[in-house]
Length: 504
Image (cartoon, rainbow, N blue to C red; front, side, top):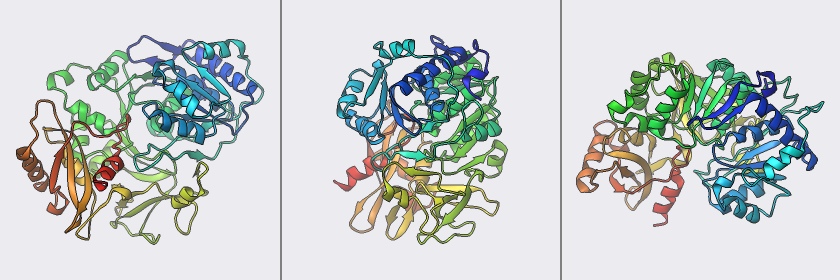
C-alpha cells in the first residue's frame, strides 16, 4: 500500500482542469529522491519538516517522502498571514521548509520570520528540482512510516500542533490507520477517482489523498472550490468518490436549476462529507439531487476518534453524525466528567486504549483535552448527545454556546435555519453583551448579490427563524456584512466575529 506497488503509468494525481498529471512511477521515484535528500540533510525518524504550497500535485511527493522516512510533515495554511504561518514553522521545529513560488513573497517572508529553517527548497525556483536530480531513487533497506503533524484551524484561538504517536513499521508492509479505516468504509481501490475540492493543507484532504494514492486510485485536485467547476470536474474525470464540506453543498444547491442539470454526475458512487455539521434540510436536498450516496463521518484534526453514518442510517436518524466503533468509544460527560445517559447533552469524549495525540510542546492544552480522571478519554470541545441506539447528535462547540437569561443557546440551530433563506449567502450567530440578558443572540448575515439589506429584511429573517425553532433560540437582532471570516476549508472562524463584538 504505497506508490511503488502500482503500474508506473497509472495516473496518481491530476489537476481538475486536466493540464497536469503525476503518474505512480513519478510519484514513487520523486518521493524516494526527496526522502534521500532529506536524509542527507540530517533529518531522522521523528524529525519535522513543513510544506507551504497550494493544491499542487507535487504536494503528494512531499507527503510520501515523509511517509517513507519516519518524519512528521506539517502542511501550512497558505491563507494565513506571514507571521501566523511563520509561527507554525517555528513551533513545529521544522528542519526543512518546502515552499511554492505561486505564493509570491509569502514563502520568503515566512522563512525570514521563522528564523530560517536549515533547508529550504522552492518548488518553482529550481532548488526543489535540483535537490531531486542530485538524490538517489534507490529504495533504502528501511523505510519507516511517517505521519502528519497538522495544526488546528485556529477558529477558537491560536493554532495548536496536533502531534500523533509516530507509527511503527515499514511503509511497504504496514498500512496507516487512515488507510485501513477509510478503505473499509468507502471501498477505495485502484478504480477510485477521487475529487478533492478543498485545500490540501487541511487534515481531511491531505489524509484522504494519501489513502487514495496508497491504494492505487487517482486523485483529482481542484486549485480552488467553485460550485459549477466542481460539477464539471465530476463529469470530466468520471469521479467515483468525492469529499465536501456543508458550505460547498449550500453553494451548489444555490446554482440555478439549469446549471445543476447541465452536468452528468452518474459516475459518482460515494460523496463523503465532514468538517462541520450539515443542516438537515441541506443534506436532504443533496440526497434528492444526488441520490442516497452521501456518507458522513465526524472526526477532527486530532484524530482522537471517529463516527460514521451511511445514507440509509441517516434517513432513519436525520441529523446524526453516526456511531462509534472504529476509533474509540463515545462518552458524553457533564462538566464534572460524569458519564451522561442517552438523550442528555454534554461534552463529547472518545475513549481509546491509550492517549492518541498531544498538543506539540503544550502540556497544559493537552491536559485540557483530557477527561478529568481518564487521560485516554479526549475531547476537542464539541457538545452533543447520543440516542438509545448509540447515534451521536452534535449540538455545537462548547466555546460558542450563548448563555442568555441563564438559558444555554447553541447558535448552530439558528444558523442551520438561516442558511436556507434565499436572501442569505452566509451567516453566523453569536452571543453579544446584553445588560438585561447577559448575552443576546445576534445573527450576522452576508446577503446574496442583488439583495438589499435593511430593517425589513432583518424582521423577515428573525420571523423566518422563529417560525421554525423555539423563539428564545432565534436572533433578537441581525447585522449585515459584506463577508464572514471563513477558512478556505469552509469552517467559520466564529471566534474572530464574537471577539469583535465583545471588544465593542
